Amino acid sequence: MIIDAHVHLLPRKVLRDRTPFCKSDQPFGSIYSTEKARIVSGDEIIAYMDDSGINRAIVFGFPWEDRDLVKENNDEIWSFHQSHAERIIPFAVLSSDLGEPTYKEAERTLEGGFAGLGELAVYHRGWSRIDLDALYPIIRLAAMKTVPVLIHVNEPVGHNYPGKIPVDFSGLLQVISDNPDVDFILAHFGGGVFIYSLMPEIRSALARTYIDTAASPFLYDAKIYDVACSIMGSDKILFGSDFPLLPLVRYLKDFDKAGIHGNVREDILGGNVNRLLAGKFQ
Image 1 (tube, rainbow, N blue to C red):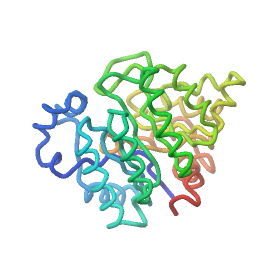
Image 2: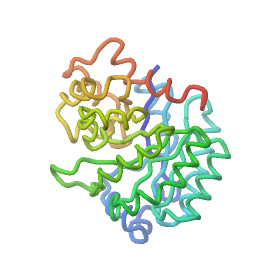
Image 3: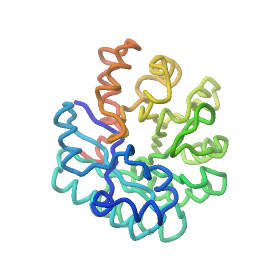
Image 4: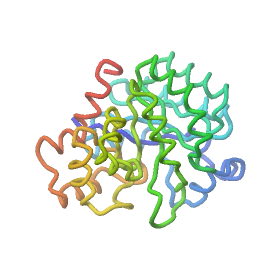
């Protein structure tokens, strides 16, 4: 079974005309103001899955500043899931405004049956300690509902690109350490934070933390897979395409280059996330 753990679906009205949203939502505009940043429909996601042999996908929206648009995005994702119940696993996106209304949206969606929260992101300012501290009530809710939390993280060095943000890694690790009963998924190979698992105390803190592969062909040499498997363990790596950014085939090329085959390949491509969600959304 192949499960894509990182797929984006935006509201239909944004797909029809992104221009007003690029103007009204600065973080969205910083990423999607160019037509090179694709936006796809639910039908296109299903076509991608069919063409790639992907059985299931975790699908979520964008962390809009407008909380009403966040709700609309989540409602459309839920409708998409209902139309393809055996294939689409809905995660609830939340506003970058991490106040009480955002908590209420997390509560609403999880009580409604969403399988997790994410991709949580603050594209306009990055993850500061203040923003990370604001996540605690939401994360405690995820703990009560026993669902995973997917957080947008990126590497602190290297080339700049739309959506790259500063991350307080010390604060992030503190949040994870303070919530040992929560399964975290850190997008984009966790910005490389897994390397610190070579430190015993960090390895202990990351015991229930996973990293996904989203956008990795744009960021890392294919050797990242071998390094991550060696340090983090192949059971903690989840294939995520960041579709429509990249398709599965691009990742398979890196798997081949890195010599990722057999059971390890099967686990990364779906086995790991299947076990992570066992009993939660199956």
